[in-house]
Image 1 (cartoon, rainbow, N blue to C red):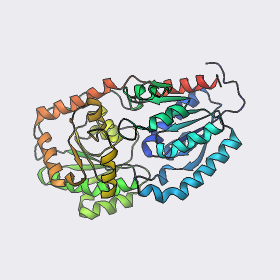
Image 2: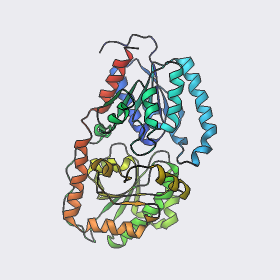
Image 3: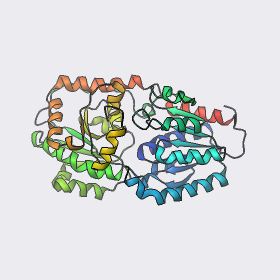
Image 4: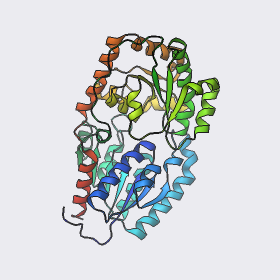
Length: 386
């Protein structure tokens, strides 16, 4: 690849939650493989910090969620806007890469547009689910948009945006799998239940007690069942134990807190209790049967149900266009009812195996790896034309 014809090789990448931080970190790795003279500045979290040259701010640890909670972050956002404005003026980066997190990144796009700094939008907002008006501003303010679902390019092209689909970045991380076996479970089976309560503080505090209560019911039937609690770095072991103790402190003796980046332990799970979000798609690619649940403050829920346009909360269901994964939302998220759905799958080997196989079939709809490398090459190639 020809060298970038500029002496300044600063790039800023902005991500605001754990999932975007992971994908941003993988993109940084590929960019630096292709050009080791790049100086990458990150506003993100611990994953991007580990691979960038400079962490400007740990935004992931302070990420807000919800309509009311976001107002509490106004002071933080004002501080960050000032920080980014100063950064853009002093460092004059070659480009800015916005990763997901539209609530904040759309302000970054405006700052860059005013200074004629190109922005690449990686993982654009899910306008197909809600707030379709965001597509126009993203199309107008981005040099190029990198979609992660095959149906997204058409949405942005309607607004004359330059958009490319190279595939979903999870394909780089999760290898192709075979469906889980169809042998029967019994009360003596050492079943492993994956617990994925979310990545944000509020999600974890709402869902971990819910899932552990469901696990307790599962354990009443499958006596040797164990729970693997998959936790993001932003939450401490102590906080996890405190939340489990709200249900039954003794459950920690049958649980292990897992912090991993390679999905090895997750792939070994027999079943997962999963908060909606990226985790549902990860489980699908791993072929791990699951149920999905999501709860939020009631006022947030009433607002969300009026603006969300898709019939499902699980990405695999959205991609497959059918309710393969059973979803439990708000008042319907009851541990006893959820546990019955788990039993109906664990007690039916044929259904369990078919479920796993159908989850894996999602992969063929998501493009081909290597995704992050292709995007990194496109970005560096585009910078030559500035």
